[in-house]
Image (cartoon, rainbow, N blue to C red; front, side, top):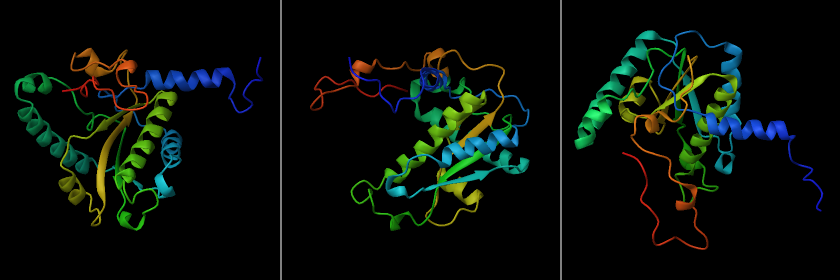
Amino acid sequence: MTDANPHRFPEAEVSAIYRVIAERRDMRHFRSDPVDPAVLARLLWAAHHAPSVGYMQPWRFIRITDRGLRERMHGLVEKERCATARALGEREEDFMRLKVEGLLEAGEVIVVALSDGREKHIFGRRTLPEMDLASVACAIQNMWLAARAEGIGMGWVSIFDPVELATLLDMPVGARPVAILCIGHVDEFYPRPMLEIHQWAERMPLETVLFENGWRADAPPASGG
């Protein structure tokens, strides 16, 4: 019998980590109640403590508190929502029935962006420059898991033109918006991912995406619409 791993967290804490991963949801339906500033601060702390390639910390967070600005951002999202629907062809009507954002309802809206000046960071990016984006995604995931643990809903909106949003938010040359995050209280969390509930797509079985010693010739294509 081997000794227990001395670095392992207590069982209840380990279980909580796996539970929050399983119950995290991309939320679209929000109440308008304000988010406690202390909770929001903890969510941003979680995001800022994400791993980043070369410790470059390329994430920047813009809190949107101006109602008029929110409405203009909503207009950008709605414009792209219609364009995306047209591009989907036969699934256009199905897509238009989906609620894709909660910009006007959520208690908080945060835009997450890539910083300018990223070309200076070559540690870990010389052959994979997109690792700055991967690092920002880690920050968003940290925030998402922390939000679920706090009982706060979060939705990642990516349906917008990044150039138009960067212009609207006066971003410097080289910076790029990655996500609009809707954050707030919800009446309930979806029992399953919303796109599963609406039969848009299903989670692929793990065994179909797990390979060993090379790419499987019968690997399935990526799921989704």
